[in-house]
Image (cartoon, rainbow, N blue to C red; front, side, top):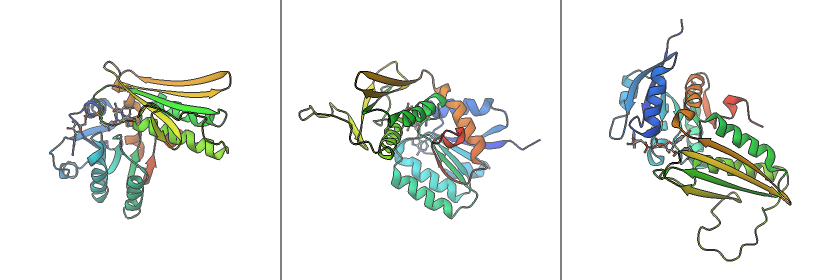
Length: 252
Ligand SMILES: NC(=O)C1=CN([C@@H]2O[C@H](COP(=O)(O)OP(=O)(O)OC[C@H]3O[C@@H](n4cnc5c(N)ncnc54)[C@H](O)[C@@H]3O)[C@@H](O)[C@H]2O)C=CC1
Ligand SMILES: O=C(O)C1=N[C@H](C(=O)O)C[C@H](O)C1
């Protein structure tokens, strides 16, 4: 019988960290060996003999965590948002000097959300207009969501590859923020509402028609199949993987 994968959870007292702790405890072939939160020393991950650390913390610390883990030879599965091309690039470079170590950074581990992003990329080249609306619980600290940014970047890349120009928008007078954030030329709107968990609508428009792609996470358990998949796969996947798309064979 194979040895279990030894897993540490960073941010274990948080909403996602707590859900991950329970999912790892219940998962076949995984063993929870350490739970850390703010103020704890990351050396506990190594002392516990963890193979993989799952990070659901805050944008200001997550990159440092990954570099420390890579130096220690611990694979990382990261759901924390706030990553950009520069921070991902630094991790990619670091991993060149740490052969055999894998890092998965995914803005959304819910399978439906990953599919929604893939569908949006596929559809984007056929529509003149595209906007993204993300809706979340009001305790979320970042806006727009990492998922919405990733979605908009995917749409923008698909539009550019198809030779589409800017989305039409005649706005010349607007209250600050009324048109949302501009992510690579795609407008992204963020709603914060008590009662919500994590939701996204991708609106694609042509003359006389609209395609809406919508995903709803009603409960944080929705992220767990993706987290567990990444934990199981990262140990045999050296280097940096961004998004769950590749693990689900969804990359265009
Ligand atoms: N990729 C995905 O599928 C998902 C990603 N997220 C992201 O995960 C992150 C966490 O979200 P929530 O759990 O809702 O937040 P939360 O605020 O409930 O939990 C964050 C936890 O991190 C802890 N923390 C802060 N600094 C730390 C440090 N230096 N070391 C260890 N722990 C530290 C906090 O004390 C807290 O317990 C956010 O960036 C969120 O956007 C959330 C849901 C799904
Ligand atoms: O903070 C959250 O809750 C979520 N954060 C991630 C994001 O910013 O995209 C994933 C999901 O939307 C839930």
